[in-house]
Amino acid sequence: MSELSMSAMGDVGAVFHRPDKSLIKVGSAPLQEMLRHRQVSQTEPEAGGVLLGRLIECTWDVVVDEVTAPGHRDRRWRHGFFRSRGRAQRRIREAWIESQQTRNYLGEWHTHPQDHPVPSKVDLADWARIVAKSRFEQDSLIFLIVGRKSVEAWELHKGGILPFRLIPGWD
Ligand SMILES: [Zn+2]
Image 1 (cartoon, rainbow, N blue to C red):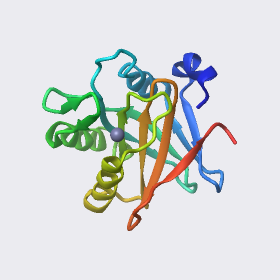
Image 2: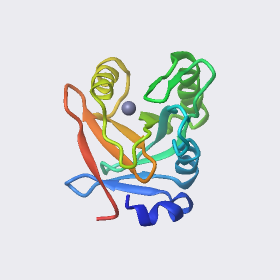
Image 3: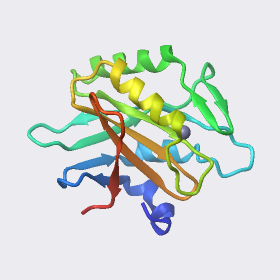
Image 4: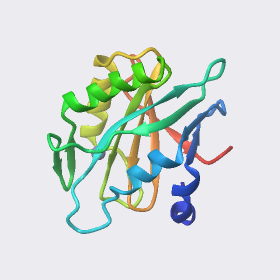
């Protein structure tokens, strides 16, 4: 996502694509929620949560419809975020039931105090652990990092170690 579009993007959501052109869409409401936690001040700690949404049938497209906000049990530092398990886990379950099994756990998001965020070694290790340990039906999970000037996305497949970056934009 370019810097130029950052001011307007909350209204329309965001789109990323894979090399095969399939799309990862982030709705406007979940995007706005994440942008609210951008680390624009000097002291703001990292924030994060889980991504929930739809796997579009007969395509590889994914739509993020909801994100959870940080809870009081999460541990938050300027350069670090550790999500406590219980609250998000409850929301994942609740959303699954409420939606007649259409709102799925899709991955994780967190913020970085960087203009254009890149995953840290800790992030890469975390993501590999999450993909290995979490229960989900699809082949991969999505990981978003919300920077000060752009939001970046990566995808990590089951059995994978290194995530690949998803390309921002329509095509
Ligand atoms: Zn990080």
